[in-house]
Image (cartoon, rainbow, N blue to C red; front, side, top):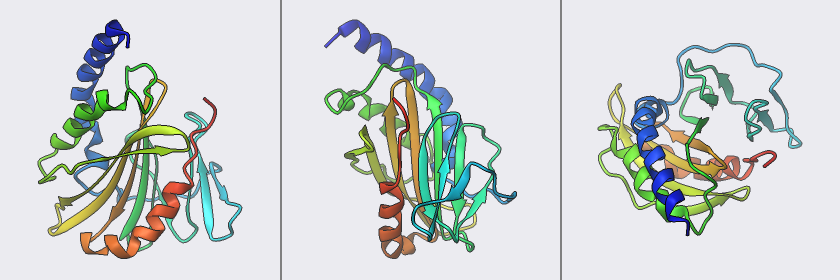
Length: 203
């Protein structure tokens, strides 16, 4: 392994992590669903399956499908490319894409970034315990999947299935949210299906 890359890449990511910790709150400890909604944009179109809509982000090329009954939301953070939720906001998905400052991460080098993904979650005090993550791939991208609960500002707890995925020099976060946390078990099949539709786009 190239030690120069290891030291330089991790140092760059550590510097970025401090910035990311300030902006990932929208997809970590608090609800990922903004209060305001706007009309659908051309980026969302019917999927091959009539019961789903597919969102394709023309800027980052990522793509994902979600139930057609869910509503598109529009967060103020430009790095958050998609938020969509069920009409009652009990289920939601968020996709955000940011520069990571790292060279390409593979399944072999993935353990290098484990402390960093852990730390991004630890930055939020609303997450009581950062769980052991599962190493995963999503459309070939390596990353980690965390499942955890968080304290809601409105009271009670919500639950997140949170993916950190690495595509070149980009960090992609895919978050599936259940509110309240007790709904996670019943929503798990839907969340698994949404996660399976993730596409990374061109390399």
